[in-house]
Length: 131
Image (cartoon, rainbow, N blue to C red; front, side, top):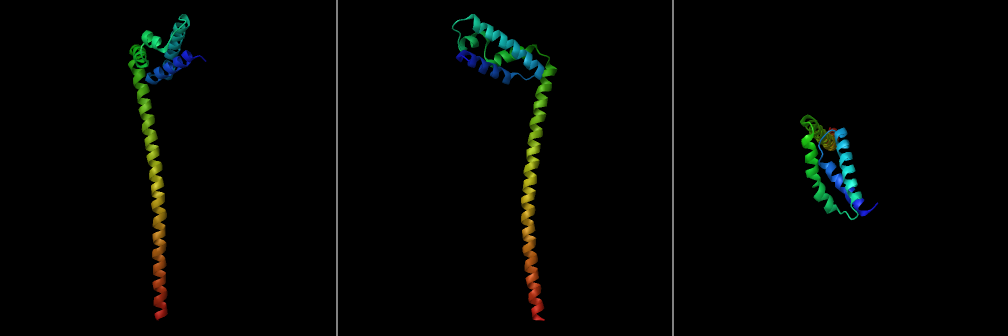
């Protein structure tokens, strides 16, 4: 893979990170951009990544341009799904940490009860010896 191809793939990856829409829409948009960028690169013998930025804009700009034509509901749903996923992961990790903490506390409380019972048994043995 040539250096410009690596740069183009990196550029497309950055564009993808700014596309907040349904997966099918994202795939179609990236395919359009990929075709346009590679055709531009093939037409020029000495194209650089700066030429691509000048022609198409920054990854954020090109993503915004495509998303401005997209339906707002599709974008909103994609963002909401991402938020729900992040919240679910945070809740799951919190529950795991809480379970771990309860297990540690429970294991230490059993040791304390054991020592308390041991102390009570020793006192009982001493009382029986006295009688």
